[in-house]
Length: 376
Length: 203
Image (tube, rainbow over all chains, first blue to last red):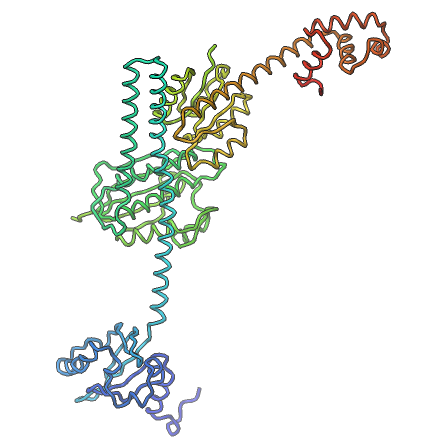
């Protein structure tokens, strides 16, 4: 490249023109009174004005009421104190379109040195598209969470139906036996007392299930409470045990009796535990010929409560580990790949963590950490 | 010997209530808390009806039924299912269960089905006994008597049989009398029926 020839080099004014025209971001130059001196094409497009409508007017026309009223005082304050709210920092602000709708922009401001009355250059990036994408993702995630909750609810309903049906079956059969014995007269007072006793015992058993169910299904907008994780594990096993029966998995519990409470939304954390326990129980292939075992452990680790769920299955498939918490990643034939990703985001919202690590048994081990009620 | 109903359910309360109910209707029961404990059993002859919970820890009710079939235990099995287990119940019926019941049970239905299962078990055992008896009788026949019997069953006259076997009709008559006596029948029709029931000829 040749050295630029001094005689034919463009003037700094034409450099500026070219920069303003080429910039994708909006660029506006104002004086210390807020009057617009230059505005580039990108900014005009962003705001929907023509150059004639803007030049010579106050820049506060491009801001919503609250900031517009204060803009002059922002500049005055800067000129007096040298303290800038925005210069050199950049921040997200709202801008006012010609048609009066507000849109988000990222604004950075620089000073152009005139000693007494400096000018300022503002560079604006339109964030509308980016925010629309974020909003869309949030909506999708909410829908997914809802779908996963329905799946979980379905599983819970099946488990609860079974747990209530068992005592009902016993009650019905005891009562039928009692009336048959009375009818044939082949019975003693002692027998009948025993039968009544059994019936009452089974009714209480069913009532206990209902009580636990009510504890589980708290109001939808439930909040975080101090809660013992051991209790949550036990309530989940009520459901998991039912599913477990057809799979022949042995569940071991190592629950820390001294476990401090964690500060959690119980329903959401139950959702995580149910996911982890179900995953562990489904970890074994059909032709698995060893004893199927799942270990659930709770313990305190510093300021955290730690729950681990391990299985002695075949472990993760090669390459699966890096995708574990991605939505729609699944290795199950009928899986939708949401369990772990939702569990992961619930843990994060609690200020906790969900991770996979080498297991205490040979297979997979998931580790959930949640903050304790009070630290220190 | 009392015909027994064997109950397999992991829920103690359900087990006890079923025992009580069946006992109150005159049945004798034995209870098992798992498939494994039932499989330890060597002698299934007292068992005329199996009442199996479809969901059992470890070996499931369905697997238990398959294993028993494989061992040659032909006792009629009734499955007990929860409401959500209908597909499993269908599978059970397909693999040869005689019936299924949904929890909670209705006593009349339970008792009818248990009775039907026991009746079926009796019938099956009678038939097997008869088959054994026929085979035992057949074993006492001489080769010649067997040849004569084959002719009788084919509807041949003594003369025709005599010609086929190149012996005298008089000898055929003697063999025929011995055969009927050994098979404990008094007519050709009864002989054919007996062999038919034992699956030895097409009737």
